[in-house]
Structures are given as C-alpha cells and as structure tokens.
Amino acid sequence: MERKTKQRDVLFAVLEEAQGPMSPLELLEAAKRSVPGIGIATIYRNIKSFVDEGIAQPVHLPGEPDRYELSGKSHHHHFFCRDCKRTFEMNGCPGHLERLAPPGFEVDGHDFFLYGRCTDCKAPPPPRRKRPPALAT
Amino acid sequence: MERKTKQRDVLFAVLEEAQGPMSPLELLEAAKRSVPGIGIATIYRNIKSFVDEGIAQPVHLPGEPDRYELSGKSHHHHFFCRDCKRTFEMNGCPGHLERLAPPGFEVDGHDFFLYGRCTDCKAPPPPRRKRPPALAT
DNA sequence: TGCTAATTGATATTTGATTCTCACTTATTG
DNA sequence: CAATAAGTGAGAATCAAATATCAATTAGCA
Image: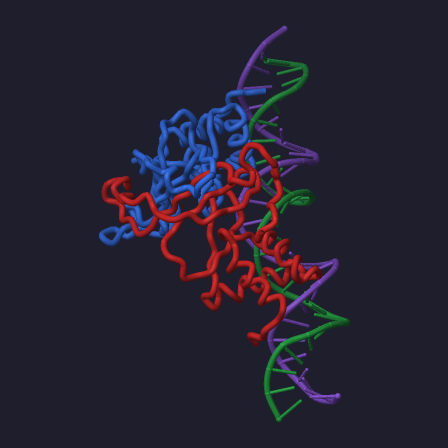
C-alpha cells in the first residue's frame, strides 16, 4: 500500500496551496482541475489515508461538515465566509481564554471562529458569491 | 395550533433550568423524567416550534449535532465537556477578536468554545463519565 | 515488459440526524 | 360532556455525509 498516484499527489498539492482547511467537495472541485475524472470516493479515501498517517487533520466547524488541513501548522484559528462557505486560516489567538470557564471546570483546549465575508465575496466590485473563485492564479 | 401540552411545558421547563444548550437526545432523556412515554419526534417537533416562535434558538458546535437554548440570553459562549458531551453556558467573551481576521475581510460575528471536563466528570472523587448526571439537585 | 495487488471511479449502501406518516390521544371550545 | 382539530408516540422515510463494493485501471517491482 501507499502508492504514489496522480490523485493522491494532486490532493496533497491542493491542501498545500489552500488558504485554509477544505471540505471533501471543495477538494473534489479543486482536484478536478488537474484530474478531471476524479471521483468523490477517491477524495474521501485519500483524506482518510492522510489523516491516518498524520499528514492531515480534520477541522470541525459549527454546523458545517468537516474541513481538512495539513498537519504541523502552528496554533491558529479560522474565518468562515458566510457567502462562499470557504474557511480561511487566521494567525494569532485571542488568548486569556481559560479564565472564562465555569469555576471548577478543567480546560484543555479551545476553538475560535470569525464569521463574515472574505475579500472575494465582500461588497462590490466583482461580486463573486456562492461559489469559490479559482484557487491559484 | 399552539396548544398547551404536558410535553411542551416539560420541554420548556427543562430548557429553562438547563446549565447550557441541550441536544434533542438530552432533552428526551430529561423530559422522560416527567413524561416517561415521550418520544423523540415530539422533542423535534417542539424544538422546531420553539425556534419558529423565537422562544429558542440552535447552538451549533464543532463536530457535534445542534444544541438548543432559550432565546434572549445576553452574549455568551460555551464549554463542552469531552466526557459527558454536555455543553455549558459561560459568561464573558474574549473580546478584541476582529483584529485577527485577514486584511480586507469583513467580520460580522464570532464563536468561541472551551473544551475539557466539567466538575462532574473531572478527576475523582465520584467519577461519573460518559453519561450526564441528574440535572437538578 | 509482465505480473499482481493497490487504487480508482461509479454507484450502492450505511450511518446519524431529522422529518414524516398515521392511528390514537387529548386540549380547547361550545 | 361532545365535537373536533392539534398534539403525540412509534416507526417508516428522508437527507446529507461518509463508507463500502466491484470491475477496470495502474503503480511498483521482478
């Protein structure tokens, strides 16, 4: 097992160049640009493979299907665009968070999200909503 | 429509006394203490009714089914217990959040969660994991 | 180059959450 | 109390996400 396939390479490349974690369907669309015939099953299979190998990890979003990003990134959070539904990586962290936990509770992690509109979807000019624009230029 | 039923009253009471937003299954279990024969469909129907009427609202959690809480609460966030899976309301907010958004992005909201163990599940004594303990004392 | 097992694509199936169906029960109103 | 329509409980149905199946393709190696 663990063969080098065009599909697997393309998926890794897509994740590597992504601006944030991607959903299986986003990966499918992006990968199709390099491997037009690629199917959704292959996306799920490779995601699972990446996750099992520690190459990628799932990003859970409130009320949204999981996204996936490459492992090894430093601590960060995400911005979710309400229009195109894409998730973007953000730098930094609010910090000073545990203080908000109820007394006696043991905190071992946190999550933080910002919502709004990404530059591509924000007001005019060139409104390009509901669908992610091309990734790389 | 809009009749006063025992089931509806019990569900409202459960939400009113809850320490945080509750899932349909949590509501089912809690309601059974007052109405043993209550079914899951009734839970969903009443939740929908509450939400439509603005009495309650959904709380989306990362990688978890929606919870529901009564409307009208002041701005707050949630603590999720990794053991019993219950969600607790917290006071306060990290604040100073928009500064983290990528340049040019338009922020119109945020979410924030703390993870760990609630007092009931935290270390010994009386370990009571995987299942929510009785609500009221 | 040829063999063999892993991978793929298309599609069926499963899973978990939620909604629907329908016969029965019950809250409201006269 | 009687009439009647809304509400309920149990189980079937639905929906989206994820996984499994299987014949065809292909990577890795002799």
